[in-house]
Amino acid sequence: MSEIPRNDSQQPRLGLVLTGGGARAAYQVGALRAIAEMLPSHARSPFPVICGTSAGAINAAGLAMAATHFLTGIKRLEAVWSNLHTGQIYRSDLIGVLHTMLRYFGSIVSSRMAGKPVSLLDNTPLRQLLACHLPFRGIRRSIHAGALHALGITAWGYASEQSVTFYQANPSIIPWKRAQRIGVPSRIGIQHLMASASIPLIFPAIRVNREYFGDGSMRQFAPLSPALHLGADRLLVISVNEKKEADCERIKVTGYPPPAQIAGHVMNSIFVDGLDADLERLRRINQTLSLIPETQTGNMPLLRTIDCMVITPSERIDELAQAYASSLPRTIRYFFHAAGAMGPKGSAMLSYVLFEAPFCQALIDLGYQDTLRQRDEVLAFIFGQQE
Image (cartoon, rainbow, N blue to C red; front, side):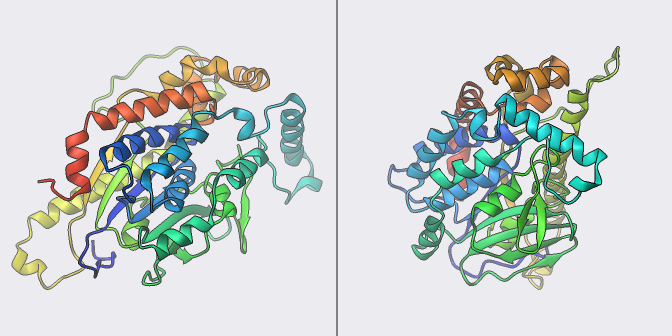
């Protein structure tokens, strides 16, 4: 992969890539807890490079802050996710929901609302939650202690139309610029996480420096690239979407799709398609490079294969979400029911915004069990012993 700088250090660097997916990101915490339990209790993070997008950015930041004590960071994240309530992410009270929606639809019909940040939901509570639980000074401490090489948080710039990776890293990292994606050195803070997790239309755009940003999964055509630019040699990806079968049965449907079903497909196109395409691209590049004799690649030091392991859910998360739909606050249930999100056809959309402890705990348990089943493979990959 010729555009990626080579790691000049003697020690290989394992990169962790945490994708977006709203409430689905709880799955990542379970997977990471399983990994933490495979290592000594006081071990440092095995991931010198950590990159996150959307809700995955929040998990990434939490890990980076506690890179000197991996298990502590995982327990901190698990404590938040396993006790989560919708009202801690966005306003779910009747007055708050009505006020936000009236502003949103008012902005469509009135020019006086133009330019003001509007969205279907008000995620001010999320900002307060992050401020309470994430000590951002820990990122700098982790870097200085040598436990963290780089943290990258990606968001989409609405004005520049660029996928921007804000990173806090070892001074050796050089900013990069590629087609519609750049790397910008920053001091990571709440604004970066809020911007990266700002699902379009559902949550408001967030201003960082000179422009407004939205969810980092939008038009992120190369989600694996930031970790490689930040010095990773190998990648562990924790996805929040189950593997799709190559052959899908075409089903005859009756009736027009409800708004929530359409919104669910839009969400999937934002959070899923970019990663799947980039993983396929990486596999093809690795396969091509394996066919080139070493005598020829020796003159191209930047051209190399990248080993990658992906952990994915063994169950359909949208179906799991439907079982926990009743845990949503009554006000939110009412609006979601009107949009068709409470039925089977709307479960995909529901799975992204169901920030309730029972659902999140179920995802944590699923991620934990899925990763434990691959214990030998995971340990071999972390320690570079895979064949």
